[in-house]
Length: 362
Ligand code: SAH
Image 1 (cartoon, rainbow, N blue to C red):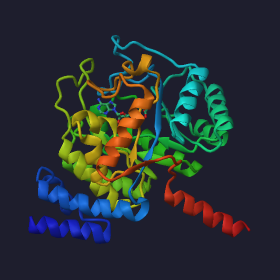
Image 2: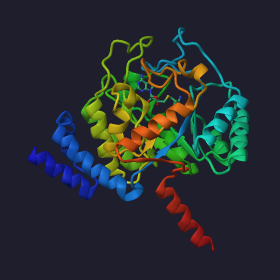
Image 3: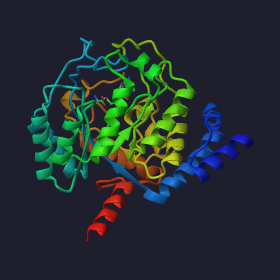
Image 4: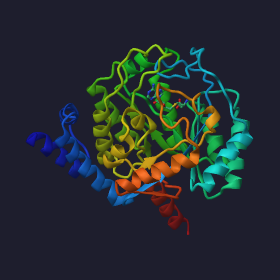
């Protein structure tokens, strides 16, 4: 314990550890005392930037059609049991209307990789949302695209893009995806997104099949190098209609430990306590915030389609109206001393860069 406490303090002070030191901390994720100490430092760090504010994003899962066949994902192409749906532009705008009235100032548009939504259609959707709600941010999570496509979404007004890298180790990536999908291409997409100017999010599933702690340390290196504005992590959870149906779920305590470590290596990062974390444990999102996360992403999708966007089994909140989700989360945050705020919740780093640019121009 003493040795690990020392490492945690070092991580807090210096924002980085040697590989074997990271491993030493990760190995002890099951010990409450260690996790509490890490969480304390992670919270202190989050407070420095965000106080007790928790940002909220309205998640609109607008299509579950997908051309990919990732072994872990419930909406993979080969899952013939999935009931497929697509929301029309008007339905998406209705979700935004409802979300805006509930206090959401970021809309996250997420889908499978669905060719039905051409760049022209996506540009129209982005432009219409921005026209109606110029004070809101748009986050996209549409998977891998050409750089030109990313650029035109950015030019249309999209602000952020989430693309989890899933694992930075090419061999491990191979265990999770069919061969037409490569780690190299996924990483290239992330670099393109950063270069274009998106607030960019990467991330992993914790405890995905074949993952080792060494892989996780590689992921930490990847994050440090990419300097993402957002990081999305949650436990892997099996889905009964996928090749990984018999695989065990990822560890809750390892996910919490990792949230704290990520807060310490990327102090101002936007870090959600994800739905998967809330699914693996009834207090998961609260515990995530207490481990250093500062974002929650309740669902704004129409209730009629919620159950169809099943990435994994037993996903929570699939029967609740958006308003109920918002109130429920707001109360959950209040109970642990945090406040859900009505705010775009931009990356502080990005705002600072913009401010410096503006000063230089004038
Ligand atoms: N098509 C988009 C959105 C994918 S869904 C894209 O490619 O980015 C968003 C994330 O859900 C994925 O990146 C993955 O990390 C996570 N996910 C998918 N299946 C999961 C599972 N079985 N358990 C936990 N997380 C899962």
